Length: 82
Image 1 (cartoon, rainbow, N blue to C red):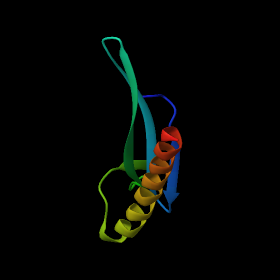
Image 2: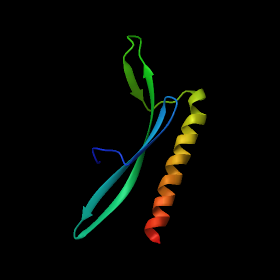
Image 3: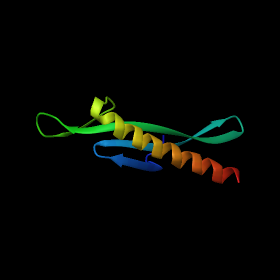
């Protein structure tokens, strides 16, 4: 994975991060994207933590940022095909 994300979408404490990956197989090199979904929260000591577990109230925000990530990637794919 790249050390810097391609794009990040955030709604409250929920973040969808798009990563651009490159792979080489023989003489062929290609790129593909992955999306990570995280929820930020403060632990009992007040330190910020990150998890990929969602609570029921997080699901609408998760759906929103995932839809934004999908729109971004679908648009990017259409532009590269044109």
